[in-house]
Every structure is written in C-alpha cells, then in structure tokens.
Length: 201
Image (tube, rainbow, N blue to C red; front, top):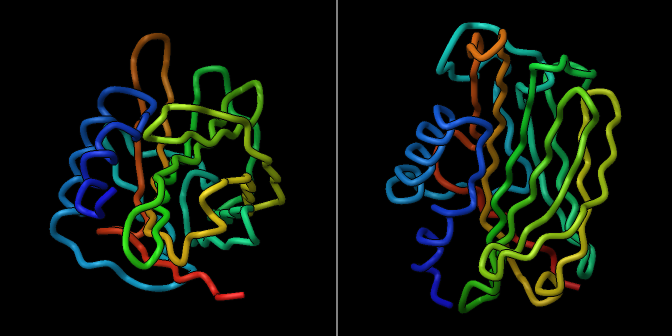
C-alpha cells in the first residue's frame, strides 16, 4: 500500500459521538492531512483549555488533552493520554470519546492503519482497536490512573514498523432530554499528523 492512500483510509475511521462532531472532526482532519506538515516527536503537548465548541461552553477537564505519546515493544503498542483533570464517572446523558489513528510504516510503505478508541459514559470506560482496512475489532487493555489513560494492544504489523504517523481527537457531549446543551472536541496535534520513529533493536 502506498503512503498516498492513507488519506482515503482516514476518512472512514473517525467515529464521532454525534453528527455535529462528525462534520467538524472529519473536515479538520482531512484539511490537516493535505496541508499541514508532520511534526516528529514521541510525545505531543498542548496547553489546556483549548477545546473547540459546537454547542454550549462547558466540558469536563477529563476531555481536555494536554499530551499524548505512543511507544512500541515488539508487537505491543502503548498509547498514553494525559488530560487536564482526573477521569470521573459521567452522567446518564453525558459521553466522552478519544479516537486515535495510527498509520504503521516501514522504510518504503504503509503496513497497516489502526484506530484506537476509548468510550466513556455513565456505565464505565471501554477501549478497542480496529484494523481500518479489514474492519476487524478487538478489545484493548485500558488503565486509568488519575489524569492518565493508558491503552495497550497487540498489533501484528508493529514488529516490522520503523515509524508511525498518528493523531488523536477527543469529543464530549451532554444532553438535556433530546437537546444537546454542550458539544466540544479537540485535536492533538492541532494540525497534520505526528511522526514517531521507533528505536531499532
């Protein structure tokens, strides 16, 4: 698979909470992929309080990302998400989501694209990983520790990958009955994809 095909893959893997977030998230992601240069680092940081609003003006600090990093250990991928405030239970009409796109590459081509997703609602916190090309899913290991969320999953292509391009977005929604009273999202990095080069053995 050529690296040029990754933009087409990306359009179909963002699964936002509501349609209003879908329009904003996909539009920004596609513009970023086509226009913004990649940055190269293992960890991407940003200031707190920079979420973008579709509706309303409030959101919990656990939806506000301040840094994210990825690392590999053989065929195990670990993603660490740090947020502004500790993770807490949400109400029945609240939902939050983190959605990371990871494009695994060797020196010549894209090996595979994966989506790591975390859903948080009133019943708990859940994580999964999806192979974007084949649409297969499996649970991911998830650890919540204060303001840190750690996702670990086994990916067959990771052993051969020398680098990964990735970005992540978070989204939050709160309703009163059927009315959306707050809806916000955040991207990290704000533009384009981050490039992480994996250490050689």
